[in-house]
Amino acid sequence: MDDMAGVLVRPLQLLRSRPHNTLDRLSVYEGVSRDELFPAPDRLPRVRTRRRWSLPGFENEDLSFASLHEPIEPLFREHYHARSRRIQTVYARRIRPKGSEGRPRLLYIHGYMQPETMIEEHGLLAGLARTLNVEIVHLQPPYHGRRKPRSSAYDGERFWTADVVRSLEAMRQTVLDARTLLSVMLDESPNPVGLSGLSLGGSFTAILACLEPRFDFSAPFIAHMDMGALLRDAPVLGAMRKDLARFGWTPRDFGDFFTRIGWDELEPVIPADRILLLAAQEDRFFDAEVLRTMWSRWGEPEIHWYPTSHMGFLPHMPSAIGHLRRFINRVSLP
Image (cartoon, rainbow, N blue to C red; front, side, top):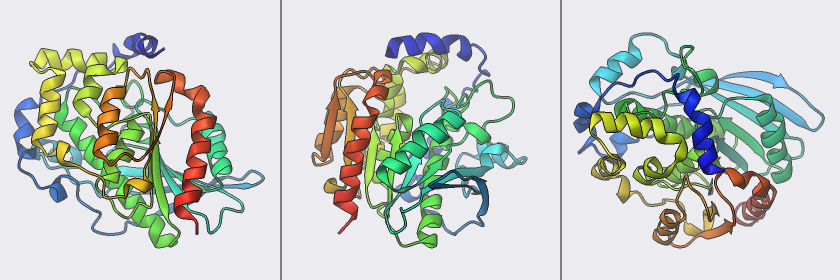
């Protein structure tokens, strides 16, 4: 199923825009401190709230605010500020089941190439909120959903490409947007906020567990945070590998760059007993051995393995959500 996913996205990726070769501009990120590379939000943004829909037992709202992101690389920073862009506005959807007052809350980040759909909102997110009995705030990363440029052929087209400057800035912006959204949620209520995400959203869940101690817990689904291994393995990243090869880079070169900017030095700032990992044994996107290495380095937090592939994980979601519910109740309630 994982290999089939790679085959199915090839026709779509033929429509992708040609990435710029920005490899000669990456030196500006080397030697930069962690706080400069991944800064904490320096202020609370002005948040606009709009009611979306109301179903029996649920409330749903849109949250939006201006991203606090400031690119590091000079040419991309000039491009970013040259005109108003859709990625400069952060969008999040809040789904609050009735009766969840006083419960912990969950910030959720979706995966790569995942569009905003009503099926996801009414099915996955509403079902997740009801099963966990928690408020869920769903963050859209840059270049996805309403943050997708009008010229993009598909969601996430410009998020993860051989234009490494833009890809790294998209990662930096996702991390800062999530930390800003956390500040907004904590300003609204002192109830604890945990973090979860699926696939690439799970990678950001892991990354944020290493950067943001204000999260009460972290639960990455089928993901690790080794970017070189992800580029090497993921069937859907064939176009990115091909474009980088034209520029003279291999997945190992890509991983070495992340090592040079201090990626391998990231370790959780959340205690191991507040981390839950859910993994697929036959994952062709996020290699199981890479995930086991991360699990060991992280102090062996709770982990549950499923005998399936990355794309085959969906039928196991009820079981995974059950583990997440028990985990949240254990770590966040008296």
